[in-house]
Amino acid sequence: MIDFGDWMPDQPSMNAGVSRLENGAPAARGFRSVNSPVQVTDADRLFSAYTFNGFNVPGGTVSMDRIRGLISTVAVSSGTLSSNIFVGTETALYKLDVTSNRFAPWNYDAATAPAQQDPTYSGVKQWQFAEFATTGGARYVYAAGGPGQILQRFPSNGSAAPTDVSGAPNATHVAAISRFLVCGNTSGSEAQIVWSEIDAAENWGSSNQAGNQVLADTDEVTGIVGGESGLILTRKGLYRMNYVGPPLVFTFERVANRGCDFAGSVASLSSDQVFFLSEDGFQFYNAGRVQNISSERITRFFFSDFDRSRSADLSCVSDPTSDQIIWSYASKTASGTNDTLLFYNYVLDKWGIARTPHDFVGFSRQVGKTLEQLDDPNTTVTFAGSVSAQSALNLAQNGASNLTSLDDMTVSLDSARFAGGSSFLTLAVTRSGACTLNELAGSVLPLTVETGEFEAAPGHFVLVNGLMPHIDAADATIKGAVGARNRQTDELRFGELATVNATNYIPSRKSGRYFRGKFTATGNWSHAYGFQVDAKPQGRR
Image (tube, rainbow, N blue to C red; front, side, top):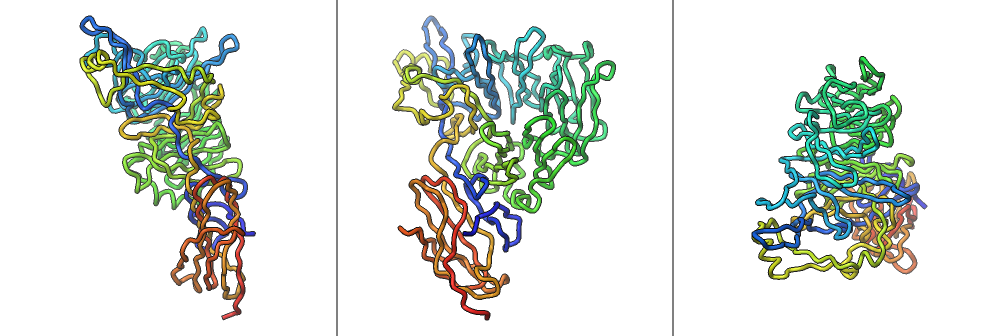
């Protein structure tokens, strides 16, 4: 049997790996299947009930805008686990209403509001979030929306609406380092780091150890990773941010001259283990040492596939359910959204890829629900697009409603989303103008594997009669074809894809000296790891 080997599209044609891959995650041998996104939140968001001109409007829904950031918070009180999910769009921050499974503002937010409005924002391309506990233990979420937006704050349990953090900077990046909240890339300077007072992220300035530092020997701050000490990523290098106390408070030590060129590409296991993207490929910072993990494997492929004009849409996450870092990006053939997930298994040191339309990648954590809770009807008014207060009133008076039931569910009851306390990889997906959170728990994405070139009998011309794939599948259609050429200067031509028969054989007759195998799997396949070749040497010619 010939193992598929690793996906290494940057290698020359003759190699022991896979030259082309679609929809396979890295495994110890070969590739595992990747599922399509399944919607786990409603496509509409709520607004609260209110009174308009003496009439009581019970509340309603409008289409959810594109999601540009996500945080999931967890708290344990008296042995009970509670979870909250918050998202940000270009213009607003929302919380998930668990009962209706819809996102909602804290207050009514119509254009002409008869009740208090949430704050609104403008032009936020990506939100970054950090949790921080103040003195006394109260936990808050802090949201950074870029140099044009002042830092926002709201309780981790979602009990109060977001507010401006007075005196805080407008910042692109935010993280908790030691006992401080730290911001980077501010409206003051793209190389500026600003930190709060100790144990008091609501207070900023120059007292109680609050301060700031412009990194004079670098340029744009492209990421911050928190911890007992922090890692500051810039385009020109990496800096260790260490707390030393007054009068300096923090020191900044340059620990690497290789920097991060793409702000959305940073994911971490800790502040000593950080993954990011530079102009020469994907990097792994490991306790003072930077290693290129994509060189001569996928770097050239990535930059030939990646749409640089949409680098602001890059996102990245350390998947809590596997040993993988996952990057989300738009390929050059994407239409209006990201379409590619790039997988790196840092335990196996292997790569994989999947294609599915989405906006960004993150992760969520949810509490369990009973069947009774899931089947509890939630009566709401359903609107298409934006809606005025008067339109809401008219629809409410006409009795428009939308009921949620088990029959309407689009996600399996076995999903981690209902398991209680489970984390799941989360994709924000926009469909028909409305955005939802999704889990990779749908149908299996179709696989394509094209091997590197090999000699079936070194030094001989060979007649290949067929292939025998090793692809585990419960219910799938598996096809294959052979490509052949006599010289590596010749054009390699594949035969027609043929379906595997009842004896696990794919007839595919080709003669030549150098060969490739191509395989596809559609349906419920699970693990693709190799193949055999039925070949006969024809002599030395």
